[in-house]
Figure 1: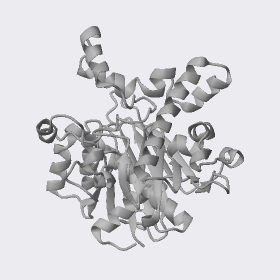
Figure 2 (figure 1 turned 30 degrees about the horizontal axis):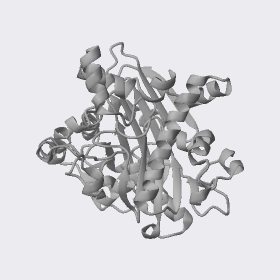
Figure 3 (figure 1 turned 180 degrees about the vertical axis):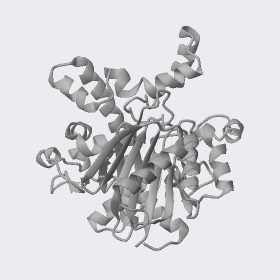
Figure 4 (figure 1 turned 90 degrees about the vertical axis):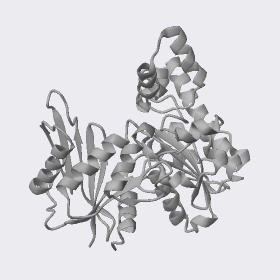
Length: 400
C-alpha cells in the first residue's frame, strides 16, 4: 500500500487529504482555517471515516498548521504510524513556462515557485509556505509540486499569446497560462474512462464552474483552449471575480474615480462577478431570489450564463465539433438551472438535455443528455486531490 498526503495551502488555510493509492480511497481529510488570525481564532476540521471533529485553536503560521494536522491524525486517526505517507503532493497554481508536469521539490524548484509569485501573487506564496511547512513536518519523504498551469502547456501560440508588444510580453512573461488544469485533466480522463473510449479519440469541453470558474477545450487529451489567462481573473463570470472586461474600463476608473492598483485589484477579484452583479456570490441565493421575482438577480444570472455560452460556442469552433461536454465543480455538479440555461436551444448542434436527468440528484458520473443527443453531456465530479496524488506517484516513481 502506498499512501500519499495531498496538501492545498492557501494564504490563511490548509486543506489536506490522506489517500490510500492502492484503492484510491480517502483515509482522512481536513481543513485548517484562519491561519495567522490576529484574534487567534483558527478553526480546525478533521474527518476520518464517519467521524468529523471541529475545534478552535490559535494557528500562528503554516508550520503551526502542520502541527495541528499531525495532532488530528494522532488523536482522531488514522495513525500515521499505521498509514505512513510515502510522499506529499502539493497544489501549486503557477508554473509559468518552467514546469510542464509534476516536479519533485528541490531547492531550485522552491526558488522557481518563489520567482513566479508575481504571476500568481494570491496563490504561489501561500503554496510555497505550505511546501516549506510540510517539509518541516515530513522531512524524510519526497515532496512533489503539481501545477495548475501544467495541463495548459500544450496551448498553441495562437491561443496563448496576447496581442501586445512582443518584447514587453516576453520580458514580463505576459501570456495565457490558464488554471484549474489539474481538475480539467482529471475530468477529461474520467470522462473517457466512463465512456469506455480512448481519450485520444475524444473532443471534450470541460466546464469547471464553481466560485472560481473556467472552461477548457480538450482535444485528444490535450488542452487547446482555456478561459483563464495570465491569472485566474480572465474568462467566465465567477463568484467574486469579473472575468473578461475591457482593460480601458480600468483606465477610466483610475482617471475619473482615482482608483489605484490595490483598489482595482480588490474590485475585480473580490467585489465583482455574481457578488458585484447581484450582491451575493452564492448561486443558490441568486436562484432563490429569481424565483421570488427579483429582476436584479435574474439579470445577474443572465450575464453569468451568457459568458458560459460564449465560451462554449467558441470552443465548439476551436475543436471542430465536440463529442462530450462535462460539467464539474460546485455549480457545474449541483445547479440544474445553470446547466439547462447554458445548453438551452442547442439541439441544432446535436446537444439535447434530458430535463428529468438534469434535475435528478445523484452521486458519481452521470449522463444528463437524451439518448438521441449526438453530444454526450455528463456531470463528472472532480477530484483534484486524487489527481495530485496520482501525479505525485508518477513523479517519484513510487508504485501504488
